[in-house]
Structures are given as structure tokens and as C-alpha cells.
Image (tube, rainbow, N blue to C red):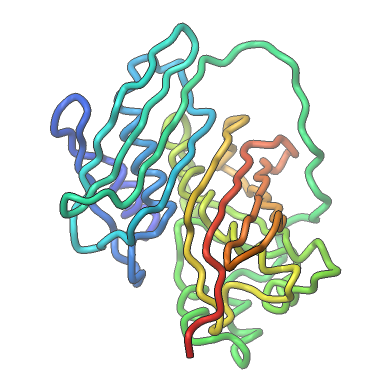
Length: 288
């Protein structure tokens, strides 16, 4: 079974009662549960308490409280905060061993007419012909740490292709295109509907904080840097087109006191803004 198939299978939460669910985490060599999996499981639990299929998620905000244990199931407790005429709001707490590891609040809306504006998609060029992660590993084998090689060599749920692989490995603070990455699902049958939003949440935790390292000419592969997500916000503007490539545009918003703030805009290939992400996390020198 592919990593994609295992992750999608993990979204089939076991219902314990109307507001409680159970999930399990696939194991892919992580030391702890990937934050995007916590986000997507939390969003899935919230979805399962929203009865109106016309309501789709438009925002979620979460806090990473404790490292998740890959060997233990997760119990998800959903609270139905609001079922209004057009908005539904849910709070979901993910618990292991009686302690919360992640909490999320998600809002759902009924689509309707209104004012429309979005920033233009950056000019990134097509993803076809760009080196994939396996090729990047081969090209930069002499400088990449062992952990980075293992990560890049894995066939993950989303394939990533940096617009400039040289700048991906060696970021240049004066080159903004070092912050552009194409992403595509590794599946021949792209999902739609509810599953597409869950997979968008899964993707939204990938490399967000990396953008906050670019002003320093660093990246998350550097062995002397320790990073850990603290909180995460995702705004979902338009349905993601997971049948094609998505463009992720990273931006550093600030670093201070060992905490970094990064932002990512995610565009469908046609240029439609599908999501905006902001994440804060620890960025500190590793203890030698």
C-alpha cells in the first residue's frame, strides 16, 4: 500500500458516539505524528458532525500541545459550538493517554455570492521538467544530511518540486523565487468533495516554517536548527484542484525570541487562490 493510500485510509475515523471518534497514525519513519495528519484528522472529525453537505470548511485554527505518539490511537472529542443559518463551528480536541496533543477550531460555510479579490499567482514556470525530490537528492548528495536524504527519497503523499532546486538547498535571502514550490498528489485517482479539503489541510503543514528561514539563508535541512510547530491557521478560499499541480508561495513574516512566523499562499495551477496558511513555531539552534 502506498503512503497516499495509508494516509487516506487513516481518515476513516471510528465513530465512538455522536461527538467522539478514534483514529490511528500511519508510520513512515517520523519520530512523532506529522502535524498535517493531526490537522486533517481534526478537520475530518469536525466534518463528521456537520450534517449539511452544502457547508464546506473555510477556516481552521489549531494549537500543537504535545508530541503525538505514533504507537497510540488518538481519541477526538468534537464540540458543536454553533449551527447557524450559514455558519457551523466546531472545536475538536485530540487526546492521547488522557492528555490533549492538539486542539482545533473549524468553521464551515454555505457558499454564496459576494465581493471577490485575490493576489496574483507568482510567475513560477511549469513544474514539468523540474527535478523531483529523488533527483534533488542525487544532485545534492554531498551536502544534504542523512535525514534530509531519507525524507526526500520517500514517496510521500504529495510530490514536491521546488522552482529552483539550487535555492531550495541553498536559500538566498535576495532571491524570492527560492520560496516557490509545486506540489502534486501521488495518485492516479484525484479526490474531490470532502476528501479534497482534508488533503489540503494535510498539505498545509508542509514546509511553512521553512519560509521563515530564507531571510537567514537557512533551511529546515540544516542539522544545527531545531524546529517545532506551535500553532497553525488555514483559510480555505476555493476548492483545491487536486487533479493537477498546486503552487505554494512561502513568505517569512518575522522571527524573534526563538519563534518564527511563516506564511504560504496555495494556488491552483490556473491561478486561483485556494488557501492561505500562517504558522508559528520554534526555530532554535540545536544543542551541541
